[in-house]
Image 1: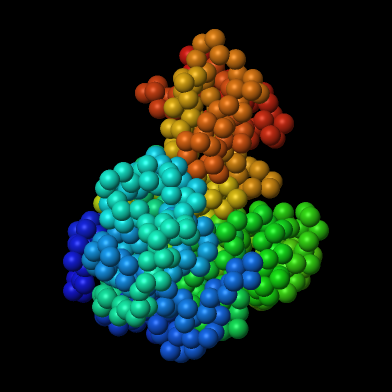
Image 2 (image 1 turned 180 degrees about the vertical axis):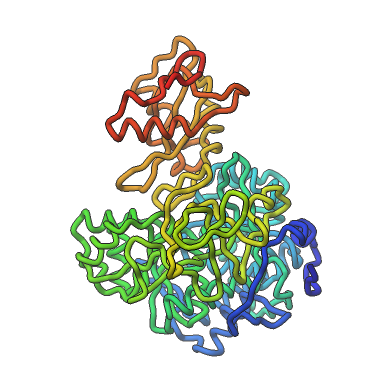
Length: 559
């Protein structure tokens, strides 16, 4: 596949793109998707926005009343670029890892990295040192920028290989102090439209995370498809939401979309569902992004009134049931905009808004994308069938040096790992995850990663992790654990293991349901049979306990 001349001096990302014949098909069917060959996404999102909408327009807001204008955000992102290039010697193509909660400085850093021609590596601030270390090994950043409150575990993971730069600390080496000594004048590097701009780690069905690779034009394509045609934002909109900016769902909804259309964004570092709704209401938010779990929690507390000022409420990250959609409609008058996206695609590619919504369905392919259902052999199925969801559009899966590229891309289609049904009108209805991903409260959790963490506990002989249905969270992590001989599997041991996992990997991944067993079901070759555990739980929940697999010391199911 022919690519445009790169501006990258450090060619790591281009050198580690997957082979061209394993890429998905890419289509640019809308006029907005025809970008110039030389393109820096940050320059478009902030420099062009200042020119078009004015420097005094509000860009970023916080619940405590802080407001950054477009001009202030432009200056600070330029200063970040200056610190990176002038003080730290960052060159185009270098990777810069970001770690921090949703606040204005993390946005300035994100834009500044792109302006410098470097590649952003987004990470969750709650990741533990072992998890960050894995991402460092995969992406090889030269600098890591972190909120000062999350530096400790990052420093352990970085060692001497990565320069760690904090922001928000009270010392003259802090990024904010360094920025204060810079002019704030910087010309964005003249990157190619298909230079890699972003590396987005995604949880996988094995313990090793996959790292998705996205170009400068990809970042804009999300705004010019889902946002432009489904949300239809204006410069008067105020965006708010719960997803972290390390998730592409949050990055799009809280940074890329508002900046693309001259709007502003409310950035909330941490808030429960009701507090999020209170903050959004106080800020006059008109567009809200969060998971179905949060909408249910808000209604449960009888605070649907907080949502009535919204123009659009977006639900994504997990399945939105018809019951939840109808409950929100009844309590608030809002018609929730459902959608499905993927880190591999950057954002939502199936959705519907307004009168086009059909409750219980996810929606139709967003303008700029087309979607279908595939059978197990990769053949397209017609309407009325259930199969693997597949999509093609202006963005697509490119994993960083990962053989799992071949699993995600089939005959040019991006195959998401979800099972859907499609009707004659092109509406898609979610059925289930078709891989071993657990989606809990909008978080993607790889079962094998949790298994690996549990295995590190000294009293654990072996374990298996599955996702089981949960009314509040959609799914929760359930662990079946075999303890070493002589250890009692009681409530105290259960909590001990849960706390151990919270301190080993990100706390949101811990098993909320722990079941101690004497053995695990395996096939004759010794492969663990997760499906038997799932079937057993479902049968038990349905009141058919007699059908639950009985786990024996030999580890074989006698169901």
